[in-house]
Amino acid sequence: MIQKFSYHTHTNFSDGRNSLEEMLEQAVKLGFEEIGISDHFIVHKGFPQSPSLNLLQDYHAPHIYRVDFEKAVKDFKAHYEHIHTVANKYPLKIYVGAEVDYFDYDGWKEGFEYFKSECRPDYCLSGNHFLFLPDGRIIDPRDLSLAGSIEEQKKVVSNHYKMLCKAIASGLFDFIAHIDYMRRVEKNLNEDFRQDKENVVECLAKHNIPTELSTKGLRKENPDYYPAVWLADLLIEKNIPIVISDDAHQISELGSQFDKAESYLQSRNYTNRWKL
Ligand SMILES: [Zn+2]
Ligand SMILES: [Zn+2]
Image (cartoon, rainbow, N blue to C red; front, side, top):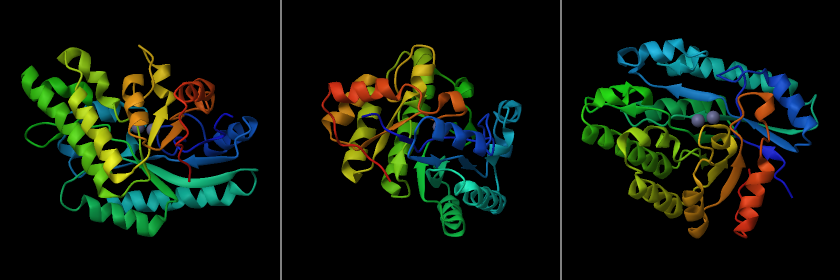
């Protein structure tokens, strides 16, 4: 059996390349039974002060980086209404969700709770994509060298994993995405942050929060799942509930390499799978 759904998908409402309708049509073609649409919900008050502002504005979908919860809520409300309006045209169970960057500054949680109460998503996953300089400014991981010495940079990355633990412990999320996303910065630092990642898995176990085995990493240079196999093996050892994800940003990525992910889980005789 191959998992016939994905809960981690993006449309051109955020940074996906395809429309909602195109994604839903593709899901039907693939024989999916369900799909969750989880466009990015990224609100941080400090984006205007970020040294990475130019990088973020250059991104093909700069509108996803927001400072204002009111505006985000308004846009997501319209997005969810659109999904609900077209939903009955497809033989699919369709969930409305969001991939949320978790932040811990004063007022963020209240803003996020406001979003939840106004927009009523069926589920939320946490996906953290940013780092913080020692002075508190938010940066794109590509700007990590701004943190200073290699030792300072390592601290910044280590703090990212602590932030993930806070997201897990917050109880705000149904599952946690790409727990080793920051492996993209490891090479320059000559450090694998093994202890930090093991701590994240301990947090998942303690709070019994599911996480994903994402095939997105298989589409990158040095292909491996998010999380990498050694870390996925640890998830399995700790009996963390797992959902296979594609993190699809276009129709060609939907359900991509789910057969491979299934085979991996089967090879470990792993059956603790999560679904909505
Ligand atoms: Zn993500
Ligand atoms: Zn994503």
